[in-house]
Length: 344
Length: 66
Image 1 (cartoon, helix red, strand yellow):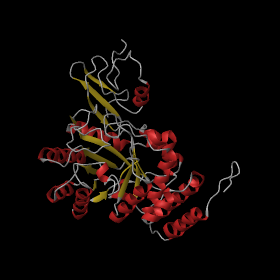
Image 2: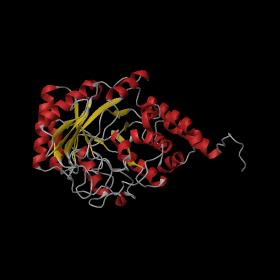
Image 3: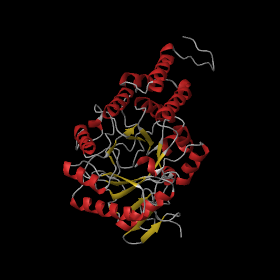
Image 4: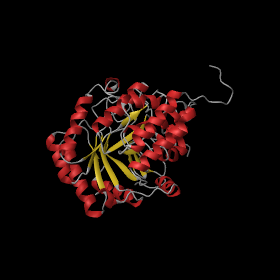
């Protein structure tokens, strides 16, 4: 087919999937299937704006204008026995990240600074396979100290749990637990060899059973095919998490994925929109890698393309945009911060 | 005093090839001591960072620690 310069041809199939998504997701609140998500991921750049606009409409219709703001902190950094190929905190790779523990006073201070931004969520993270007694004790002491001083929802991400640990965390007042499936089941073995996708799924089951909200997402741009990216969205939809953090690979020096190229901006935005159309009611959080993938305009485009939650400030081992830049942006976009009492 | 070592890769600061390090530094705390190239213990917090060298002590982000 001949193309005239500057003219973009949109095929019937492309307009069909957008029309179908409008009827199925926007009007009826029913997420796209894996096959439908794949069609969305294959849409050309010429319809990206239309796709983002639809994802934004879906987010506004089914989640509302509020944005949930979260800060995260690494309680135990580095020295992890697992081999997640994207992670600079594995002790198995030649990464410059050294092991570190945060003490309780610093943890409380970090929570206070997070709360000052207007954030309602504070997530305590540890680079471990699963928590041992020492870590559980540190988490318990940290949560008690934070709750003594301020009102903020506390989430945790401490790896794989036993049923007893899930119950204990719920009893400590952890309202949400993060455990990412990271990628499609069919791609997982190319990303992690020291544990399985099914072990992660089992922890997520325990989290829900213990009464905590389920936070589960992953990283896109780890060498998965578009079909596997769609598969991942479908598997997350089957899980039905309360929150989905969407990260974009930030290739870390010394890791097996250290030489991969970051995703292109349009691919990242298409992924955001596709995941929103697969998960119309989930809290979809812009997480790590957005700065390197999308630059300064990423936050704005994501928030107008399906995202309704952000991590503000720094990440676990890398730096983010200044928190005030994201908060100011929310004001400019007339998107109110989700209030604490909305989430309790 | 000029740094002897690159805080991102730990190699001599005078040697070439630090273009990627300069880019990385915008979103990365220092990893290596600029005086002796030891790997530092780094703690990133929501609003800042600390980096400690066992020989040369602790440095902080310009914005403070937390």
